[in-house]
Amino acid sequence: MDELKKKIEAILFSVGKYISLEDIAQLCRKDEKEVKDALLELCTDYEHKKGSLVVISDGNMWKLTTREEYGNVVRNIVSETELTKSQLETLAVIAFKYPIKQSDLIKIRTNKAYEHLSQLEEAGYITRQRYGRSKLIKLTDKFFEYFDLPKEKLKDRFKGFEDLAKTIESKEEEAELKKAEQRKISEQAKKQEEKEKKLQDGDIDIDLEDEKDSETAEEERDGETYDEKEQEGGEVKEKPGEAEIAEGFGGKESYEEKKGMTIAPEREK
Image (tube, rainbow, N blue to C red):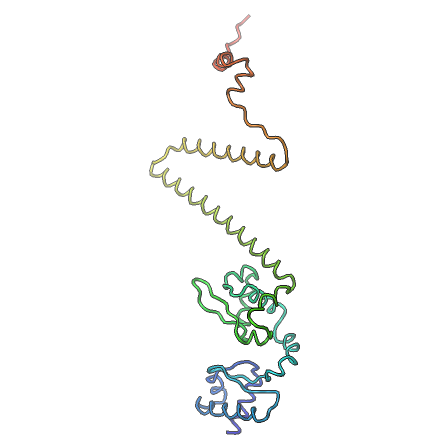
């Protein structure tokens, strides 16, 4: 048993994170019951030593770690060596937006975050659960122990992480603009598809439809011109109607007369 406990201790020390009973048994080439008995004895040994290390378990997972009272001593060292800057930034986004869907995180952190998520999950800081077509990212107890903060202070703790809040807001606005643009393109494509179907079925007159499209385009151009001038602070005049035109020709009768006139061919001299 002592030899088995030494092997288990070496495994736990080398891994440095939670490892399953099944994996330990496979590495030691022993059955799980024998390994579990050895783990329980190892726990008791460390408790009696009253040293800085302790063997802990979480369900079927086991780990050799520092005692809680020595956590503050090693936390600064661990924070510099265990997680990279990019991983910490991704973790900070998760913490600031918690709870957050994986799809929303990728919009903010781009596709490189997929690798970070796998590493953070493997390290035990997060878990991912199926949430519709995406996954919901959750923080683990290890995360809160690691950063030594209660859940209610989570957002405040990460709010100032290298202007993270501004970056998140900017990315979210950008994502919303892209969504709106995609919706517009999709609607236009749908309308075009419906129009083509009607044309094929003979439900609409193609000349009449082209005329409508031309009028719509002209109205949109007029509207854009009006908006641009209004934004620039310029004076915008409405397009003159027939009444104003008639007045310019000296009255309605004179205008109607000129409107119906045709230019006669010039006589030969």
